[in-house]
Image (tube, rainbow, N blue to C red):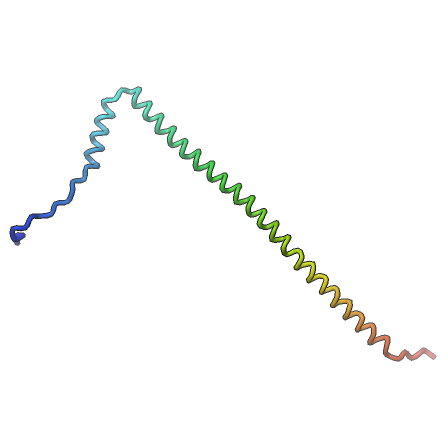
Length: 115
């Protein structure tokens, strides 16, 4: 067995949570039934309030996200409308030029009348 050369040993702090829990249990046993029921009711109410708050904020976030998403899509479609209209106009213009070139090809060719 090896000694520690006369140095003091470092002891870890005692975990008192288990002891505190036992004290709370003993204290709860001493409470009257009405007091225990009251505490249980308060715990349930608090849990219900937490759920209500979480649900309220969750639904508020969902609705806010839907509204902001809709507004964003609306403005995105408005901004792309001009680009799309310009593309369609250019496409129609190119189609007209192509048709005119085809007509000029056929108009310029000599037509042989039937005998």
